[in-house]
Amino acid sequence: MAKGRQLKGRIRSVQNTRKITKTMELVATSKLKRAQDRVVAARPYAAALREVIADLVTPELAERFPLLRRPAAPGKGGPRRAAIILITSNRGLAGGFNANLIKEARRRMEALEAEGYEPELYGIGKKGIGFFRYLGRKFATERVDIGDRPTADHAAEVVQPLIEAYERGELASVDLVYAQFQSAISTPPATVRILPVAAPEAKAAEKGIRPDYILEPGPDELLAKLLPLYVRNALYRGLVETAAGEHGARRTAMKNATDNAGEILEVLKRTYNRQRQAAITQEISEIVGGAAALQG
Image (cartoon, rainbow, N blue to C red):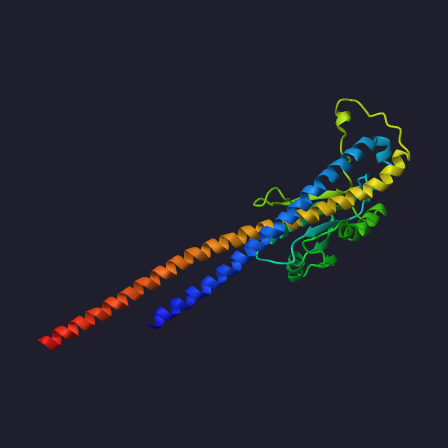
């Protein structure tokens, strides 16, 4: 019966594990709804901001704003430093969510190094920071206090020093590696360049028509305020989409773990019942055999 007791212990262990994974799945589902609402709320503002900048930017204005200018290549006197902001989660148990983001960041670093740049890492989230620390890679900035409820102030704190460094000509570019939230089950890693700002094209300009605005203050003053805001908003969107992606990935991972635990339980219970039935049959056979021997 020693093996039977071992099976019962394994069954209790798997049952307890399934309760934990089921609870985590429910918690992730609850958090996902709130995170998804933040993603949906952030998108219209970003789209409106992009349209306004598209209507304001002209080739003449673009040359006067450092955030719109593309610096020269490293071999032609341009800066060699290139920043990469990597957003991961603070917690695990989310399947390959963090591993995919880290892989995307490493791919981007290799591409920049091949072009002659010196990548600088700016980490948000314990998982990405811990991985590159293990590799001996230093971070220019480490933030583990943002969590899964980012705010616009968090984004401003992270990106404002980079904006100032880019305006001084110390950075060649700023790339953001984040989880693009497409749905609860689809959150692929993505890289977007937030500096220099790629001036979006106005819809009216596609038809050869420029809107005739009377602006007060003028386009220069408006762009001076809107361009940094556009960069901060790009990072904020990356933060909220990654937070939503984390909850979606964790829900999927915990659901798979719960389903797998159920399948293991079925196998263990079937094995235990067969062993118990075999033991009972063996005992009955021994009793019948003993009775027959006494009668004989």
